[in-house]
Image 1 (cartoon, rainbow, N blue to C red):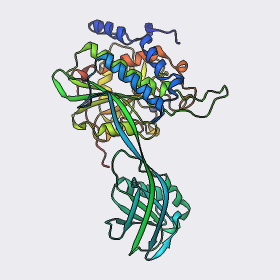
Image 2: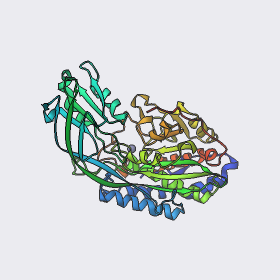
Image 3: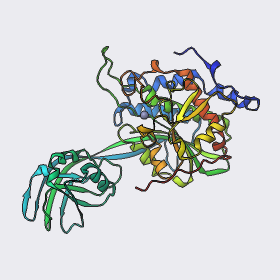
Image 4: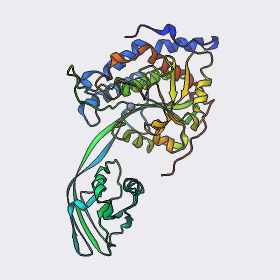
Length: 428
Ligand SMILES: [Zn+2]
């Protein structure tokens, strides 16, 4: 535990004093630690997506949302936003091109269908990848286009062909199949049969809302991911639980504390959405699913909170915002902190592409000023994705200050007085 308690924290000028009192009462080190201890406990076994233990974490978050007095999101009858992921395990592949047999190893199907059967009459688009092309980049483009496609890969790419197995269709929605075949033939006629074992697994975000007083339809999202990577390689002292205390029990804790704070303040004109995402570590599926359940055009801002448990590279009372230059979200936040010693900075690790690597990415691509707030020193954070990402390595006092700074700096957006500029949409 860090002994530098609140004395070093936010010092705000007079008119904010009463708000500050409530803030200290609700967002304090003891509460941060209470929540962190549950989420990052060894019994949670690293909160791996699809594990029984992640459900325990979800139950805890839901119980806290209930205690705070949050309402259910859009038609749900629980705080859990459940959905199913389809996975495909390869069994067999056979086929012919112009009547000649093709080897199993020369067929790779990216599909969620158990029995995939195609021939030249099945309406598949035909694309050729030449010897000189960047195979993985081209394949990625074709798969993203989400159209039924037969891809004839030139035999000059034979060495790299098996790398295409990395593409999976693990998904929560129906997607078009893409079949790659290593062949130089023009495939005037063809026929392929591919079998997979299909399984479905359930997973859930945890979500609750605080309806706005006057601008109900305008949404402000506070989020963090509660999944982590589970059990891994043991350390020298035999610890194999990847607790993810910082990644991202810290962000989840912040979301829960902000829910507590804003339900007590009850002065939000906009509707506030509090969400703990699942499956961030295995591809951001929780946030992708969520982004399809809300109207992005009505989502005014997203505060995604990731790894705020350690000091940033500028020391205490500071954090960075990814994609700072893509909207004026950061400037608005900083503007609400005048008189405080806390400061937000632009992301100092632009080469790491953090803006598109966390749960803010899907909504950002749809134009929402959706940013991630973090303190993690991505170049030197020594416990990142290790069994040592434990509660003892966090600076609870500083983390509390970060959460308070988010509460204060979001004030204008929460009250409907400030609206950040939109992020440029990505065409996918
Ligand atoms: Zn994370």
